[in-house]
Image 1 (cartoon, rainbow, N blue to C red):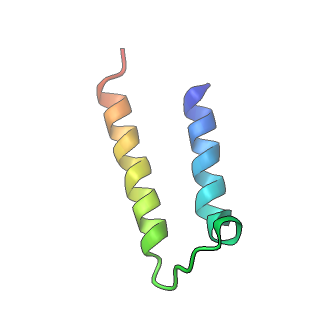
Image 2 (cartoon, rainbow, N blue to C red):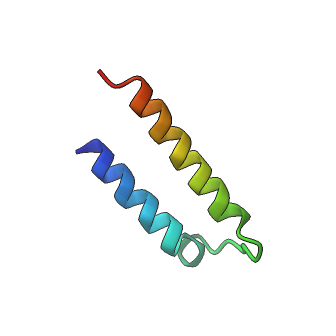
Length: 50
């Protein structure tokens, strides 16, 4: 359930975060940072899963 919430939040922020938080991202660096953080979280979560 928690991973579903995290995935939904990531998709919402990745898709609509610029409009909601009013950040200027002409080169896509904020989106790449969000993607990298999400992927790192997936890897760590997978490695430490019980």
